[in-house]
Amino acid sequence: MMLKDEVQTLRQVPLFSRVAPAKLKLLAFASDRVSYRTGETLFRQGDPGDAAYVILSGRADILAESPNGQIKVAELDDNAIVGEIAILCDISRTATVKAAMPLEALRIRKDDFLKLLADYPDMMFEILRSLADRLTRTTTELTEARAQAKTAG
Image 1 (cartoon, rainbow, N blue to C red):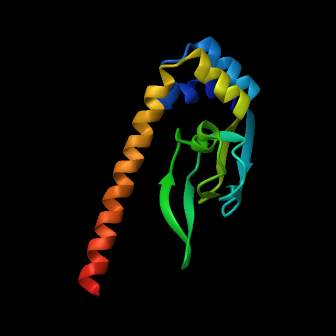
Image 2 (tube, one colour):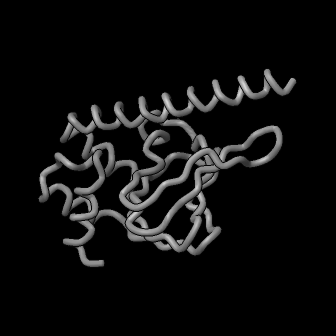
Image 3 (cartoon, rainbow, N blue to C red):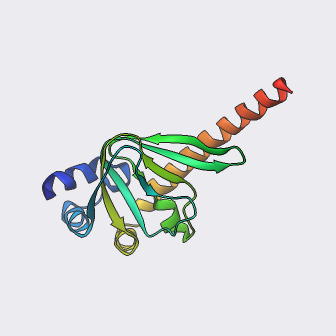
């Protein structure tokens, strides 16, 4: 994939949709293109948050540790971003991310990501929207799981 294609892909990510093409070109140039085979780990729960990943092609599973082992909590496809929470909150990774199939991604280093946020504060609204959507889904799933556990017990 050429740099202009990576810029076009970044524009498809809602978080980056309003960023000037010249800035996206710099971001794509500064980012690392990484490839993973099926089952390979992008990062593990507990790892330091050193980068965010934009999935260019493929699919990734989001896995969380539970008392009963790892459980799949979400799935991400093309143009999704993952890993940004650990960067923003300066915390360790909250989940493990594995390639569910061959996967290509752009790895955006923490410093580059934070600089882009400083240059484009409107991106924070997209991040807040994304986090609110995730929280809503998680709350709904937790409510359903607790209701099922209550009726089963």
